[in-house]
Image (cartoon, rainbow, N blue to C red; front, side, top):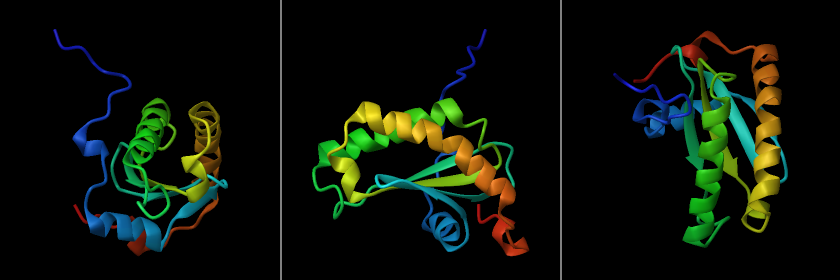
Length: 133
């Protein structure tokens, strides 16, 4: 009997190709805070995919970058149904390196619904919905 992981994060749910990141950066609905920005665009799939951008220039310590990535992934796992059908990229900002994890998690959790509303109000062009994978 197979156990279904409700909050799992599979390889299919990761954005790994550079071209996919570029498409999201090129045209997307955006929601931002002083600590991070969430960008999303349609992906022609029944599930959401997540890409993480935590620049070494903004967050120099590897442990801090890893902490932020874990935090963003965990939040995405719990909110991926809200963003089904979208590619989402989270871009960490410099201020996030010193912010408490609990505060960041609360902020990120609050932004998913805002991003979903922003996506429904945003008019994507036909080319924005094309798939590269």
